[in-house]
Length: 161
Image (cartoon, rainbow, N blue to C red; front, side, top):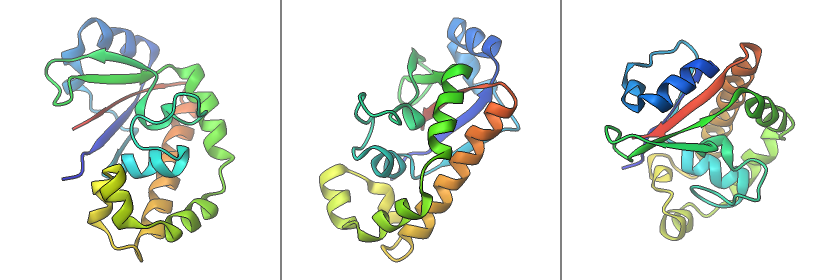
């Protein structure tokens, strides 16, 4: 089963509060959020590697965050955050992406190989024919989420479940 990647736009103070009391992550219910079952695939098509991605790649934090906080009440044991200044940098990079080119790369990809070699099980949820449009739409939603966070001066908290 493909994991769900949850992202919510939060203030600096909310990030600090979550780091002090990590279980508070379950209380978040922000209007600006992003949910996807294609986090690993997005990371792969943005950075060339699956989770967590190559730390030397400028886009690696987009899906995985930069600072991890242990949280015993989350399935994966932690959540990650991106502070507002870094969200601005990442949104700028995302805004410069050629989304059509990403869709073309998805269309050329061997889904069976990506599932077997890179454990991108979420690709089993769609056909290779659906892949370009699905991943392109997910990427556009992700770009919009980051842009809205920037417009509101917010950071991002994220986790997989």
